[in-house]
Image (cartoon, rainbow, N blue to C red; front, top):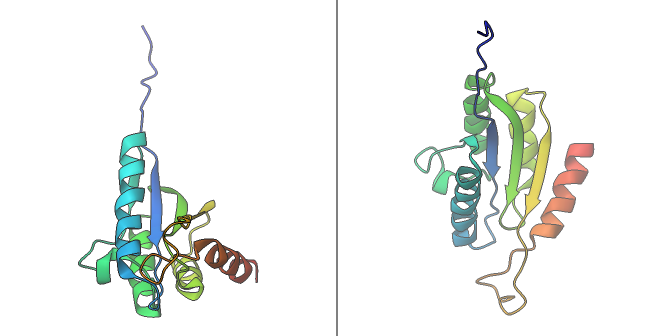
Length: 141
């Protein structure tokens, strides 16, 4: 008989989906749905803005960053790490402000969606890799 009861707990990630006003909003909306789907499929929990908190539940302004940071602070005991999701170039300052205001000391993963070679027009252009470089530069500073 064991006196130790093993408790299994689900790992939760804070998820910030970015957007930038000059890029198509539908990419951010699709990217948000995709990251949620992947996390659920892998059995992870997540803390993410709802679509009613900000436009499409993404972060692209200081106002959005404050809302997301508050959500993360309110759930700080359950967040094991942060995932920055760039479905398009996204706003690097919004990511940085969210992280600074949330004041969490957890690992950060930065994910950038790839452009599709046959969809490089204005309607589907992502430039997320360039955005990732910009986010990393701002976070390094």
